[in-house]
Length: 113
Length: 116
Image (cartoon, rainbow over all chains, first blue to last red; front, side):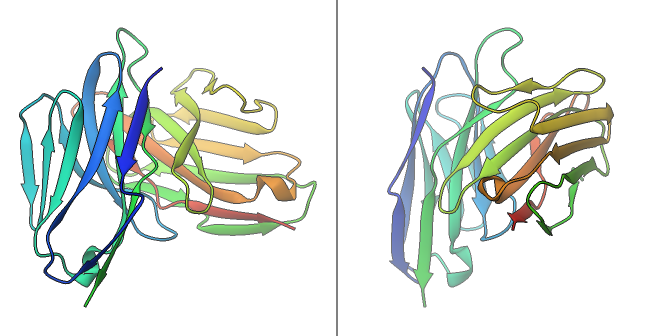
């Protein structure tokens, strides 16, 4: 069964304290791994898509990496406005059953000033 | 580009009534739309997938007769919660995916449903 696991469940950082969030996956036929940010009471906001092992993408203080088993979201020198829930999702499968995303449970990040 | 509008943002309804939630792709044609439910401090749970002009495919355990999904055009999908009960209170989120130049998944802003 396809599975996506995120860790830690919650993370509290001081402003400027860099860290990483983990997304481990067990799926048949990875077609894409997505990172989203979700603020309370809002829908997920797209951050990155990674398609193959070794791929990396960056945006401001965030950098996403991908291996054959997991993805990391690195946060460099975070600011309080980076506080949110970060969701990882995978698109997997073969043939026609490849449309839906399987979400992890998310990591709640709190950055204190 | 790739904007999905979801309305209403919140709704309160009486037990036994029906509520309709709209999801529109504003700047692209969404061949596939998805409906999710999210409980407090939990992740998104996929309820159903709908393709334009076809019947929706529901995930296991989701009642088709309670959660009616219509995807009548390439820019609009609706979710109707029929005969709502307090246990249907939740945060509902739609997502849209385009079939031509846009292959990403864009999410709406969500609808907070409270059934009293």
